[in-house]
Image (cartoon, rainbow, N blue to C red; front, side):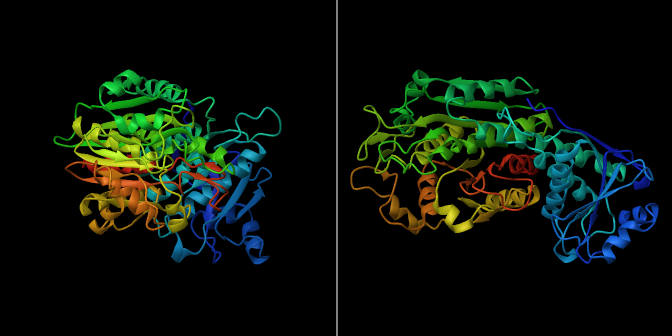
Length: 500
């Protein structure tokens, strides 16, 4: 379990803060308004000279460090660029905070203080959330298994200089970002360590950490007894046994009539099965369980913050491997709801495990469903690594999910799900087929398949193949190569909206 970074809020002038690093935002004009102007005066105009010399520019991600030489309680003042004022938003502030965190971690770590700026066109409460998230996410170290080389030093304390109104937003952001980093730990874990059984044990541990959260784990016999034929078809080639992971969150003050159903794909390693993937970059397929990790950690954050809404997490966990017992292309299997499925491609396995999980969640009381899955490479081609694809069966629910995505910084963009796409999933031999020979509308095809199993009631699907794990940094500094923790903050925001 990752220790929550200590987060405090203090009032008073920024020059009074005692810290290893005292940061403040500066726009790309550049302008030393707000705390920048105050600190410039306390430092005898040294910041203003840097502006005049062109050394302090304020571009997004720029960091200019000035030693105070005992003039202030802080050892260093850091001017953190947030970009053009007219383009300023939470993402800019997350980036700035992550850059400061990286610079601090590369030196001595310790305490970072941030002066909030009420002259910016972003409310101080939103500034606080973004700075906390950027600091925690930007402090993540994916190389924790390395035994040699320099490591980033820990930031032990983050101090926000601002009004008391930011205390609660800062606490919430800290918990959400910490759970997002725990999600990154799961997604980055190697498949020889994080088997389906081990993921189930991690889920049990999560349930034991927070009130009103319980776990139920179904093994192979129980999965078979439940007649989850689509799920079991994916597991047949692997020596690692599958698990159906179920977490239930039942707070005593939950909103009546709403049970949020969170379903996450958790293929702990995906070789493609008999439809074997190319060897290049197959190592990245340890992260094909990012949707399941987001659901488990998202519900952990929801429970820790005591959000008053009931929730049910369903995570089908297994490996997809080739062997003499593996499902073959052309096999026909029967899903939990009785639907027969022709398996035309064993590498279209995510939709198979999700099909049974969606039915199971709906049968067990979920009124509003959302699933997260690293489902298609095509969504990466369409939307890249910043937006997940968003599809569903209910416009109002899609709007809620999208609003939660934008609020949280886990961005999503809607794609169409017109009924005409259903023709792609028709099979001459079974009720449905799991893949199409046509290289068209890949994310929509997959969502059209899932829609058949979503049942009655609102359902949304997030294809997170581009956003869950990155090949390279996208330049925002709070993510880098590897897992991003995508979906945790989104689900927390969605639960809060569902509870309202």
